[in-house]
Image (cartoon, rainbow, N blue to C red; front, top):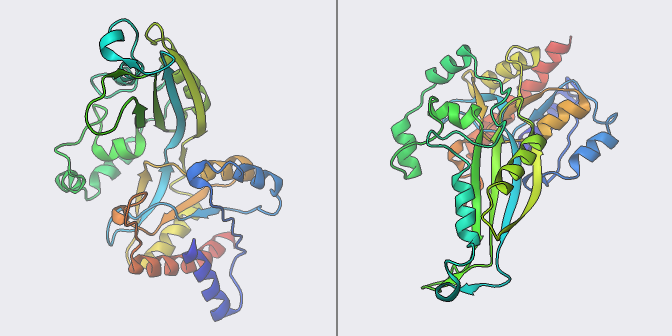
Length: 334
């Protein structure tokens, strides 16, 4: 965000005016679903009218390899809670005679995928837009060292949906993941109980043509139909947003290519991103505009983790690219 503010400041100091009009919309609720942003855009549609939106919440492909992200996965998020007995029970006295919510939850989670890593929610893959041959070639031509990827993550091997590469799985295939599980006694040492409650937080990353509302309903039905006798289920729909894919050959995309090459000194590669930025869909639905996803950081910046960081060189290059972008966009509108 700040790179764009600084680039506007630089234009005003150097030339007294911007080559295009720039409007900033800044909010701080993205990590909790941006519950008020859509309403703000709807209420202020005239004030926010524009030709194209710009978001810098993505990353470069790697050090010294800037990127334009032309696709984002969507998201659906929920919390599932299974309830059994009205209190924790002694597992020796009651175990084997009542359904254990933790066991029942594990059973449901195990049912979410088959042995090939495919999600088993009904309708999950219906109507999705597959990768084109051109996209698969572009991904394959990117410099990607799978051994380094594995080593940096501290794992022994990659895993995912059969038939797709690691980059394809990360960027352009739908997923279903358990984000957290809570049940029973989790302190030091044993405590022999049958827990009364078990819960899990689940998110699915979606690709174009997947409907988050419909798939959330399908997931709820899928889990409800597989409950062990004696357990009840509660289901909380947290939030959802569809995936987006932008036109690789639009004039705005060409302007962004020029600006990044000028700012970073090397042309950008075209990538997708596995994460979700719901406001990009809102800009399309409410304002009717596409979004340029121009990220300056690195995937090694520890996003969402301790010691999150942003390299100074990327900050300065991003600011230069932003300054070039306003002139390049002005050239497209002439």
